[in-house]
View 1 (cartoon, rainbow, N blue to C red):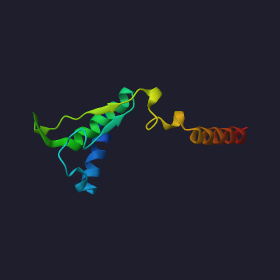
View 2: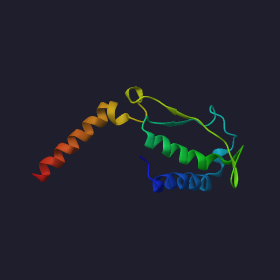
View 3: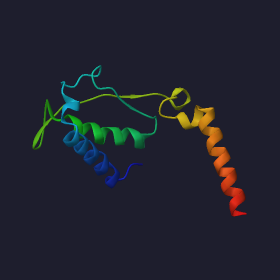
Length: 110
């Protein structure tokens, strides 16, 4: 579950990105232009929606109180085939790295 402060943080993160890199959103929104992706977990989808709302606020034709909005689509893959966002489950180099570090940490504590 994404908390209210987490939603606000993702919204503000997109605002800061737009201020720092104003040309990044040079084209109108289209699914093939700006691809959004999240994991299957609802928390990550809500993070993406908060971030995307901030990116596409005032860029669409749908009205909302105080402005307009461009609806967007977030692609979601099931966890068993999500190798980009769930790399920590499928990358043997990463898994080995973490296992070795955790083992070292365990033996240093003992």
